[in-house]
Image (cartoon, rainbow, N blue to C red; front, side, top):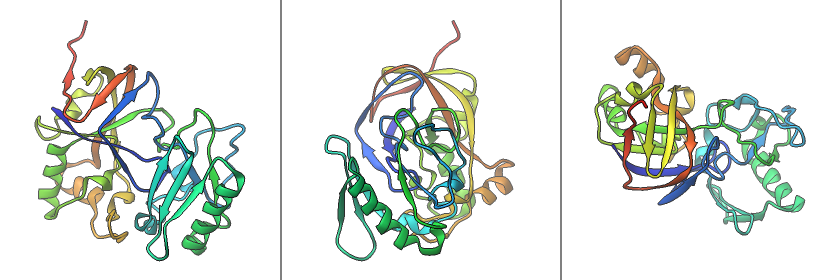
Length: 253
């Protein structure tokens, strides 16, 4: 299998950023992946004592499909977050400053309205990732498996509906599930595949329009007897991974 796409999602629930290459570190997510989140007004997340919380505590596509209509871009060197909402000029905020974070909070609270459950908080905690599972992982999707789902669904499904980090071509349909419990070589990094990814209603949302125009979890269950697409892998040995690199299973020692 070959790496076709690499993505990170700096703000939980918001748009993807494509990468040509990334450096993986042991036990970590992709750099800057899910680094930030918009905590709902009734969420008790404490940046001084961070702990994993379910996605519904934050602005997320499962509950807030309209987020797909916002395009974001993060510049880690300058600490700037750019947002382009459906209406109005682009906004650039320095999220290293309280004023910049407050600006993002104000704009997005107004955009979500009642869905915000109060005023949103733009949150970050050093070393913490706002992932859907407590463990830090790299998510991988086989495009062959996605093609099987598309045929069963009778429509094209943008890969970004599934918000994975790595998309690979080659191999057989659902062949990535056979890697469960195995170590793999991904570029210069070594990972251990440890979990299948159960798909939720967030995948119903078209990432271009923000409309719920498909139902991948239902079709997966009806056509294949499960609601899974893709796998989670823990980074064992770090190293660079680039588009075009191979994904290969490693034989047991």
